[in-house]
Image (tube, one colour):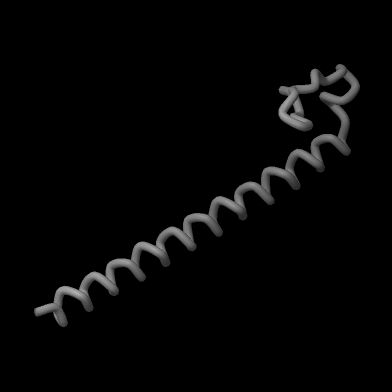
Length: 63
């Protein structure tokens, strides 16, 4: 597995593969990325509902 820096994959040395600090950083990055996905999903669903309510309002009040 390679850690990406600036879009360029950097190969890991054998010492880094079993490095506890590297594992902690990877888990922290994974947790942060997962949180970003949940935020994106929440904003997306909120936007979909907002658009739906505006469309329902437009259909009911249009002549």
